[in-house]
Length: 164
Image (cartoon, rainbow, N blue to C red; front, side, top):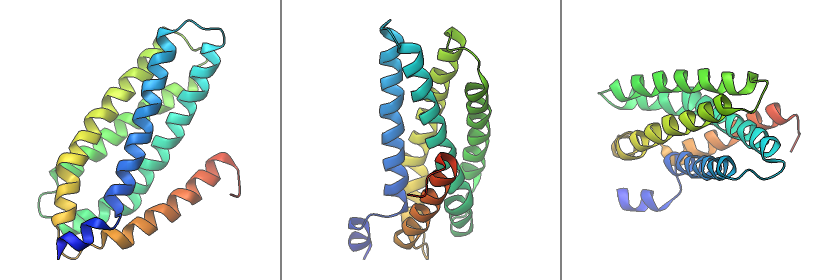
């Protein structure tokens, strides 16, 4: 039975697609820090803002929908506690990045460290949390994917001010 469910995109595959998207953005940011091209500070600011928005929305849909459902479905919740602490640390860095007046060495350091935090967080989700979620009984991850997508679209349009 699990093999038929695995083939269908589920909540974990949606969250993992977000992870891959943000990882590419962090790589692009690192490339910009290596190049001293004209306009690099402006490009870095725009990319950092985009990274922060993606992560803010991602963390919110996990905290509103994915984590509570998983907390009900699995016995060991220490992973979820750690994930929420990691989210809090990431949110603190996101706030510092968004509030920064200058795109300087400290700005770069904050974006790079945020990327390292997210890398660690993603590994734990992918290797442990998603495995447990997919093994949990009574957790409709396919249905949850739709919930996550809908909420993500709402949040993105709130943050961007678009109605798309």
